[in-house]
Image (tube, rainbow over all chains, first blue to last red; front, side, top):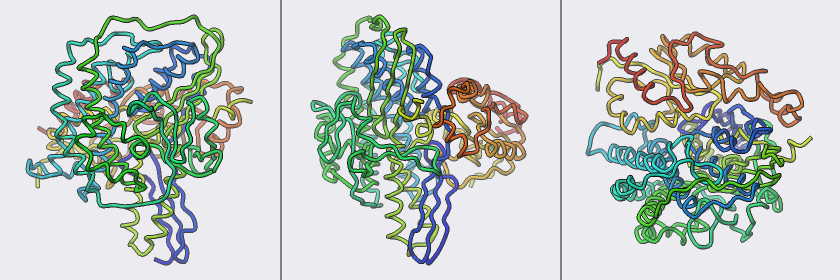
Length: 433
Length: 162
């Protein structure tokens, strides 16, 4: 290939709409644009002037697949702004509902979006109806895995998408523990299926290695998606409140979403399961560690395709974590914790399925929202994705165009990007006039 | 190869959180084997790369319309389908994606203005029925799953597909 313009109008098997344009002149990549196409809804602006109690449920509409992540991140930010500390039971129930989210969300990405790449077909719709077919077996495993994740979140939070029960200070309705034995049974039943998935995704042959920095929330005592400090490969440890200052936003003129680099080094970085496994795999659930040691040897990894394996391992961790909590938790009837409204500022940081998610809230003395800001994982990964694609194209210009297109989609897909999320935030300092 | 006639459907997403797409992927846990026998998923960007919008029996459309280019795409879908069903609150009512319609001029700070000027945003976000004929609605945020299953059943009957 000497010169070419390669355009992918719509990258498929991802959440939302994105495209790619690559210009090649005289065997050199002269231009590459990863374009996030979803139109902005400006929800962070729309919540201004609303009472804080209404905000988590509204703002979780940023995203259909990880709405639970936005919901809990918003609740954390608002609770901090109001000086509310949730009970231990609430924290455990949030952890349970989050385990359900991770199980369902990772399984959707791995089995519905990535599995066709592994099988060399276009779509799960092309998998033959043959019980002896490996793809058929994995697909049907995924139905059970996804359903169990959904059932877990529904039991704790009332729904898997836009859950009605979690609220500022606790839960509107305490979950009924009568459902827990059956949930444990379902989780135990999918364990062998999850292990089969880990084995399958460990055999993904593709490799793309680039030296990225990695960033995630890390708790020193457990593998935790909800509490901890933000850490990166270079050894920096940042408290949640300072996370915003650690990042520098970059306007990307052809994309509906801003990108992010580190504010000090101006380097790109990656968030998501690969970052979490690279930086905290020793903290995985003990039972999980017992079963996945041979797969963990590849971490830390700079191969972006290992994000898929990392997600498969995290599914098992969430299964085991949920079983532990369901076996030990003693449910008592609780009402949400409330405090008199006050003017305050709060920051929530959680690990969404596809990486670190940040919500920032500022309220007035009546509990009305004065400012709201969201930084999502896909926006943070945007520049990293482009740089990975540049490296791939520069090293593979001898390949035919169809191969380049397929590989570019696979690289983007490996990040598990979500465009709905990426187009719904505004940097707070830019909102202020 | 199964040559029995199938209901030719397309699934399309405009401005929204795509929660109904996610809910549909959840419904597939229980219904994919059964639906594959009677439904030809001709356009379903979340599940396949090779998509076609031509000659659809039913187009399911989620999301609201934010731009002239989305409006044009919607018109093209309508021309290519016999029936069009709106899916979820944003498609059926415009909200909550249309929240920006309520911004007053003081809210349109330079940051919002930057995006609205640099990309082809329409002045207002609108529901699907503001542009094309809608044959059925499956409302909800996300869509009501029972009503969706019922609606699929209705069109299987209309097209005499067992």
